[in-house]
Image (cartoon, rainbow, N blue to C red; front, side):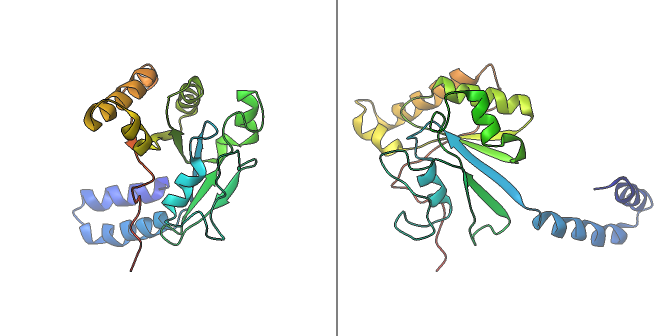
Length: 201
């Protein structure tokens, strides 16, 4: 909102002219709903970033427009994807750290971190120092990020602990690594068996 719009809204509210505020706020909401948002999906190689991008778009790996996946490194350059589920959102599937360069600083530059509005850090099996460095860097840049733990089904099937305890251990491990970086951390655990979005019928 520019300063003039804010002043007009404040003046209308102070004078009790609520009806004057309604069309202004509606116009603002419509403009915001059309604003493009760039979301970058990043993490260590092999953590399932491309699979997560496909899941968000509610498409299978075999579809022509899907992000390529595989047991070997399949994403060598950053690629953007869209979906009719959220037409104003552009998903950027970034190569895993170490896939294109050995330098963390070069990775940030090559992947153009400054251009994204939101980051999703993908982790699985372990929360590495690369993940910690990513979170610290994004915090310093003033960027919002979320942590998603993938392949949860594998953790649950191989652990001798109960599913509840395994989930708790994963969450505590990530929180312990990030406690000095951010007090409030959002962590989502997902497995390949889960549907992240619901397909429209």
